[in-house]
Amino acid sequence: MKHRMLRRVILALWIAPALALALAANPAAAQMSQRHTRWTEQKANAWYAKQPWLVGSNYIPSYAINQLEMWQPDTFDPQRIDQELGWAQSLGFTTMRVFLHDLLWEQGSDGFKKRVDTFLSIAAKHHIRPLFVLFDSCWDSNPRLGKQHDPRPGVHNSGWVQSPGAKVLEDPAQYPRLEAYVKGIVGAFGHDPRVLGWDLWNEPDNANDGSYANLEPKNKVDLVLALLPKVFEWAREAGASQPLTSGVWNGNWGSADKLSPMEKIQLGESDVLSFHSYEKPEVFESRILSLQHFGRPILCTEYMARPRGSTFEAILPIAKKYRVAAINWGFVAGKTQTYFPWDSWQHPYVDRQPAEWFHDIFHADGKPYRQDEANFIRKIIGGS
Image (cartoon, rainbow, N blue to C red; front, side):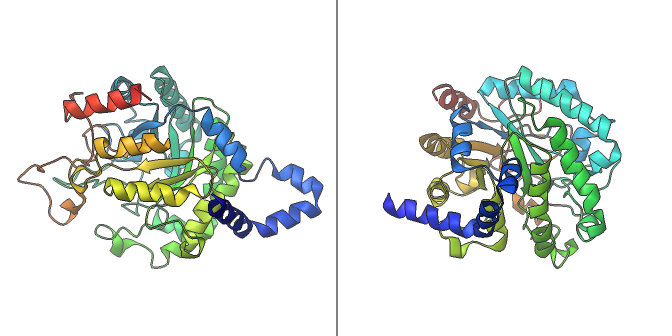
């Protein structure tokens, strides 16, 4: 216990010594900063203690190939969302992780806010509080508004798009537009009790090896490193009363000197910590343990890849043991085709079905992929 406390002290000193000195020298700035700085451990843990066990899925409706098709006015379908979130409620889910996109704000901010409000009303009806994702570094780096292309036959997530796209990421002149998006959407819903929190950037240093790597900016990581701290700052300036986070996803986070520059920003700025793990249960547990010394609530915002040993039966008991939030990838099989494995990018499943679904819980008609799996989820959440 003493060693754990010592490591937490060292990490605290490492993350923000300059800020602490500046605030000590300027009481007025210190008072102002309370509204725009990272939550204390005490505040984060007090918030988490009031939450139910947070279990859910990354949610994209079955009719949508990506975030744009989910939310654009011509394709937004509240009736279908209502039906599918009813299936989530039937499992006992308490949250869903839901991706937004900067182009949707540019397309029409008032209409976008109305659709988000509609979504939140539907979610609240089913006792679900979503975690919204603002930016994402995964998959296609050239997003376009308008009609989205059809799925590539037999390929996992063949139409998902990054936010912001590569051209925007490479152009600092676009920062004011991105700032307007962050402050606009967080400002509109930052005090809404229907919102669980804000995941500011999904896998910010993902290079998309195996899919779009040759289309990525060569200096992508440096570009995101410059922008991510600003996104945290903008969200805090917008006055979010819910916690901010950005999930680490690749590595072990038990030692400060082994953290990448991106991980230092993510773990140093997040109010509550989040991570991804598609590995076997022993790896999942080791990742929880490597984050515990930060002394903050822990959310797993992506897991579950059946053929890799990351299953509900294997992972949820561990998450429950440590009271870690558990949000799996994939909910209803649809246009994202995430029931196909990642290697379908190299070997599309055009003439066969996978021996085992990779992600997703339900068929498009609401029938569970595995009834015993659905029963297990319902039982373990109900007994929490």
